[in-house]
Image (tube, rainbow, N blue to C red):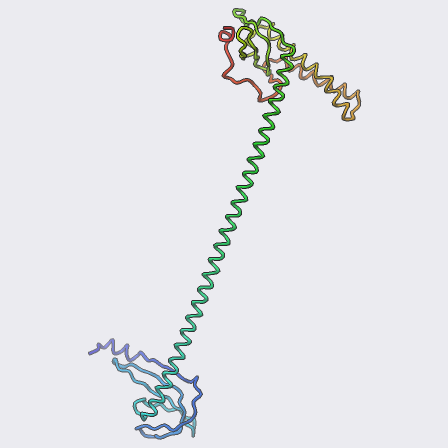
Length: 295
């Protein structure tokens, strides 16, 4: 036996299935109840479940007064019951078709959205990949340009250093170099000078070594500075010729060529001043003490 709760829920559960969408014609309905037969047309049906039992009620509209009457399906004749069941089956089929069509439309809409999301995701990935390629290409171009600049700068420094060394060696002669304390001496030629460090080429073994200018005797320091002054003075006419070639007046050129070396010459007198190319100093590892240098 069903419980009271189940019975109440069953009594409240009513399935109403209306078929007003059908344009039914008037016909004669026969039933085992009072008032039949009657001329009416089918308007719909309803189903009710009570205590687990299902009952179907048919709604009819009379022709004479348009009044609406309801009658249990089981009270109608068999022909009328078959007629109503055919209408109910047709209505259910159409409802199912509409439901399936709605589900198909919903699935199509979902598939469309999924496809759009997937296309957007792929487009975003392709965009990010293209941007990454562009960034990497830009980084590579920057790296290549930096390498070219560094190579050009290295060549410029090497060329300038080579030119400076050539000018120094051209004026150099083998002489005896003495340390500041006067205890050690060695025969060598001046090979290069960067403003603070002297590079000498020894006569005995041909090796090139470096020593700080301040560790040499005052006579040797003066010799180095005088040599560099001669090199700067030799460059002065060339500077004047270059300025004259650009169209400047010879008087202005002479004034500038005369004034510029003076500041450069005065800087040579300071042993700590870097000359002539910053960043071109000798390796610290080659810098020797007085004792090591003269032995």
